[in-house]
Length: 245
Image 1: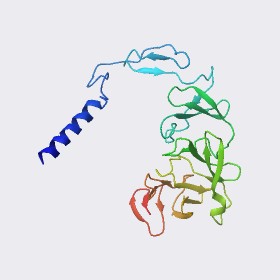
Image 2: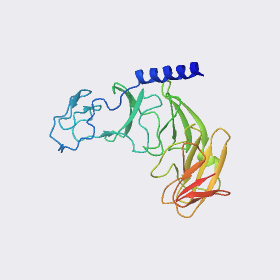
Image 3: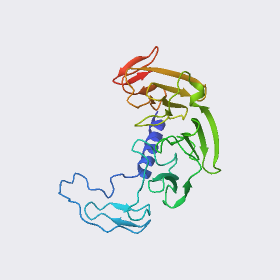
Image 4: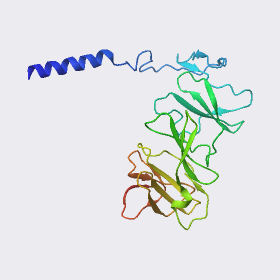
């Protein structure tokens, strides 16, 4: 028993010795007024130190005067699974840009695919070389391999549904796929919303009181879904707009 406890102590000490101190260099419990100060724009890929807070700011785009290059949306992850790649959107040229996720150097324009909406690109949660998107031309849900630019159709949103002639989309305020990159939510027009499990080819149609241009979005588990006034057969209501299926 003593040997076991001593071993545990050594393991814990080794973790403490190598663990990063996330508070290092930060102002802790700082109540001083620190108003924003004017600062010059750094050169492309260069850094400056914020004079108010002491933090480092790096400029990662070179859009030019009056142009905009930004992340897609606050709920959509810009980095891939291991943060080796980063996707931004050039609003001026209407094209997604692929950047190195660590150095932020420009790699190439992602001009070989057209998602239903600029925000509807989902990085795989495990494979850093893969993302998914719903195609705007024929409503295929596509697996995109970045390194080879290979595109594989996983399913067609129109084909797996029935009695729907509207526009297919992941909806406004789009969120993410499940954390196993297997469950995706989408809608047809403003009349029906579904989830599809890619591995089992299972489609579930939700009964909704209102749509408001949204679609059922899966939680990380793929077993919970969030939407406005969302219901499903044999589902229990967990909270406002959340169901377990």
